[in-house]
Length: 401
Ligand code: HEC
Image (cartoon, rainbow, N blue to C red; front, side, top):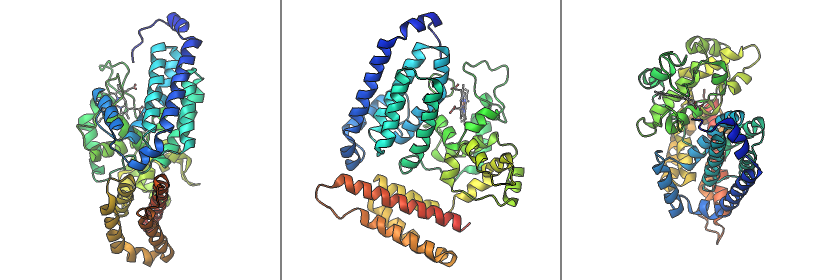
């Protein structure tokens, strides 16, 4: 991102009036975005307001994607670029950060978030507007990003494991020219500013998660050579790249996998593997297993492939049901799949089968009983029921492995 202003002029232009103005802008946005929330979630997607924003986003050259993925991507830009903008005291960069948070707040207004998450986003907005210390903003972003993964599980693009084994080939074809054939960074002859990151760099690798790579590939990084590929690569291709790239810094995945399975590493669901940074995985290595070996094992392609069990289809249907994309058909599919798989689960763990029975009944009963004028409440019930089913299905995946 370019730097057109000299440092002296920045110090002058960046005064209290500007900060105040920004603070007010963000505070207003937070207010506006909280107000229409109940109606927005009750009526689902597709209102005129959304069309208008989508047009604006299209105009900015981005593919039309869901608000949740965009929101997370915006927040990540702030997380990674704000410290640099502060260090350089670049007024234009700082203004860009404020705009990113404003976009994030607007996107959040269309999503079913808790008041706590909204307040946290508002707090990041005012911190950025008053040029708070970088550490304050980055740790608030980190905390909120973790929270958004949990609160927006149904809205975020679900990891797709159907092409995981193509990651290496796709990488060689589309990414290696800039990021190096093994993620070691660009060759000296490639003079791009900013330079493409080296995925094997320990600091970079620690912060990578497949979801973060997926978002970078889908949306690109504005004003850099990292262009958006949401239109040119399929979702499955982007996920295969995401899992592959996140594992590049973890060393030899093949050896790691062997070491990891020998050590009886706890298994994880595909969503979980997609969301976790390498640093987080390292922190969860069981005693007796080196963090490096644990990360390499968890990032091995066969581990991710194994995490993509048939139960993933049920979990996808659960999302489709709760976001309204699949409606009654999704519920029918859920019932059929459960009918087909229940016996296998019950043989392994009778209580778990009953847990899924109950969760599925909860989903079936969460909507439909039209209680006059209580649409917001119904939406809450549906989300809670879907979340309970999602968690039970995660337990099933783990139990059957
Ligand atoms: C034309 C060169 C180029 C190509 C090709 C390219 N990138 Fe990048 N990429 C960059 C640059 C430059 C950056 C650094 C942007 C910055 O400094 O913010 C970057 C940054 C990234 C990041 C870090 C984003 C973050 O969250 O910090 C990821 C992940 C990434 N690229 C993945 C990929 C993948 C996967 C591919 C192949 C589909 C790819 N890139 C292809 C130039 C490229």
